[in-house]
Length: 298
Ligand SMILES: [Zn+2]
Image 1 (tube, protein in one colour):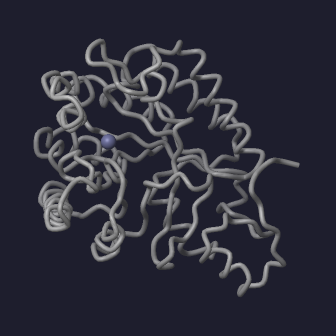
Image 2: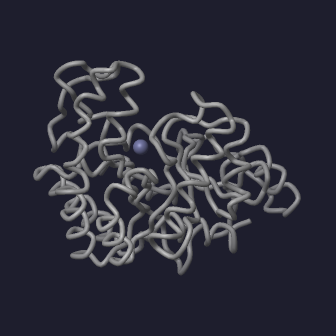
């Protein structure tokens, strides 16, 4: 027995459909994952680079002054992360603001060439909630065009850099995307209201910025200090094991400039090893998960 919010259904298509329309998490006798996998994991990275700091400058202009710190992500973090996933022969998803892809095209092409997914994370890292609708739409399309030019394809998924507006999901759908990864509503994929878009939820418990997001001055509002690596490993391992038992989806959200530090990327290596050691956890990109959910579960 768990404390999960679960709703039993008789498995009938109509009732299940109603529950899905209301955003109730998946709960049927149907296997949620392909090929008899017990659970699934999708490792996500937000390659925000200096855009994160520049956007934080709208809160306190001093943050914008240190945007150079973001360079650690594409310069050092990304190659280390690619090494880890290459060693384990696994794929992951990078959410990239268009502006970052414009500044670091070779890095983004290298991630793509290694078989990982490049997904939409706005153009600037500014929150769509703080822009007029015209600017949100313009930046959204600007990023699509940029990825089309750079990679020869447009992303199939979106994660907002900070909140959504009434038109955000309309833009995602109009671009022909299959999923959004911005919500924290549950811990298993579900269909959003329209029925055409899979939601792949994340959570702060599995966000590296919560544990390691730090600046000497000015401090982040939520800043608690720099957590020991082993403490984060234990918290994430325990969450993975709990989700594994419940057949749910494990979605760590990381930032190459944060998790790319030597001791942390070693922790990521051990975590991925732990997940794969189960032998029946499906590790794929967000696009893989969304595609499976579209085709099989609903
Ligand atoms: Zn971001």
